[in-house]
Amino acid sequence: MQNTMKVSEPAAIGDTVLFPVKLCNLPPFRAAAGKLISLSEEEGLNLRRVVSLVGGDPALAAEILFLANSSLFGFPARIESLRHAVAVLGFDGVKRLAMTVVMRDLARGVGPFVRSSWCHSVACAVIAEQIAPRLGCTAEQAYTAGLMHDIGRLGFLRSYSSEISPVLSGEYQDADQVMAAERSVMNTSHQEAGSWLIEYWALPQPFSEVCAHHHDPLAERDSPVLRVIKTACRLANAAGYAPVRYTQRPQYTDVLRSALPDIPVESFPSEEAMQSEVESRLQSFDSRARRG
Image 1 (cartoon, rainbow, N blue to C red):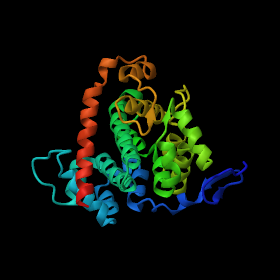
Image 2 (image 1 turned 180 degrees about the vertical axis):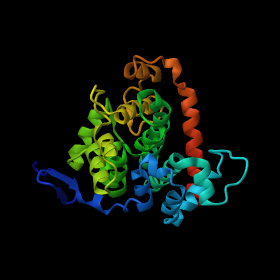
Image 3 (image 1 turned 90 degrees about the vertical axis):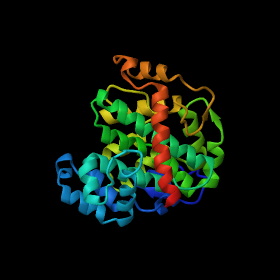
Image 4 (image 1 turned 180 degrees about the horizontal axis):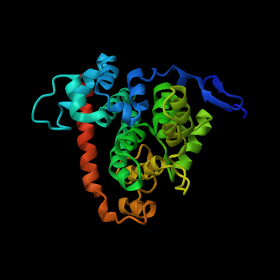
């Protein structure tokens, strides 16, 4: 591939793919969180191991304890220890909170584009965990994949804010137009950059697939988690959480009917209920960020 980048010298990955070199300078993925999402369900049943992993990152442990005691869960008694949090929340609950903390920290920053990208990721995660059981995917994997699906865009914003901001300030007909604009500046799209970051951080392969293909049309060969995120990403846009401006906002129920024609729309949460849940999560996550 010929290098046509308008940013700093790219890094060669393999023989043909070029990526913006500053993506390599992003903060390393927190080791404890990376190990958590790589654990199998059986390994996650080992309470002592989960506590040990999270406890190895005191800052992450403190964040999880704070969120466990927030209105997000509403437990009647205060959770005082990490062991108690793991016992009450379960392995999947702890993984979800750990990934929320990691992704929220990556999305820290000022400006509307970082904020809109973060809100879109949270909305996608919340919607994904709601629809996952109907599509053969676990809620935990769907939530984590939803949070991470646009990590390439967050990487651009953290590493190339001045270059990518004009792209994100535009108005587009669809995601393909957005990615074409990204490639005109970065020589790659946020899908490709996100997939590369997942592999660079040695995270599980399904998340790389989700990053690389979440804007592709739905296909029979899609894995359950990829199908969930393709649908959740579109529903997040329809619910008002698009990361960029589109010329037309799709109808929430139209997206559901198109993506999941064999499942009655009434079996899913309404657009208003989903918006309420997303706003509640954002408020809980943001309250900790302001204190941190």
